[in-house]
Image (cartoon, rainbow, N blue to C red; front, side, top):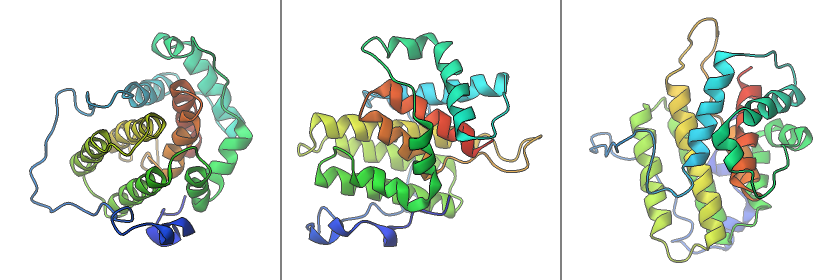
Length: 237
């Protein structure tokens, strides 16, 4: 997937205030990193189970890989992994529908489709701008080859800003925190898998993989996890 640059961001940015439109930029190189207990977790994120499950399910796939040639294959493998994970099943007590292969194909089909997920979400206008800037900054860091410590620091500071912003609704926070948790754990997972045999490429924590979690989070945390895992397995097949 091509990089998710700010210059492709949706037109509604132009109708916002300067404060809302402010992009979270790169941190100074010498900034002290606040590494938290249980790294890469963030106990301040009430939806951190989403990222934890993303990584545990991807680890389970590594332990017993299955062939994946299509998005449908990735969804099928993810369904099996989810059904075997007791922590995931605890999230499905209120009901759960598996990911749609067609929806995932759309999200992963082009870089601008991740933006469309945000545009069409139930997020408030400010939250849409916030999430767009968050994902754009993550993509910038990836393009610059930033170490995971820098990515982690950026994400937990972003989560802290969301937590203390009274404007965001409970729905905004659920979607933003679920997305940021998946991003934080997915980037950590990728940072530990740099061209390890037999792979001929790095594991990629792409914007599409993370946006799939955003899309699913509007239904439930379980759906966010399953969609992000299926997207990750497909893009890293």
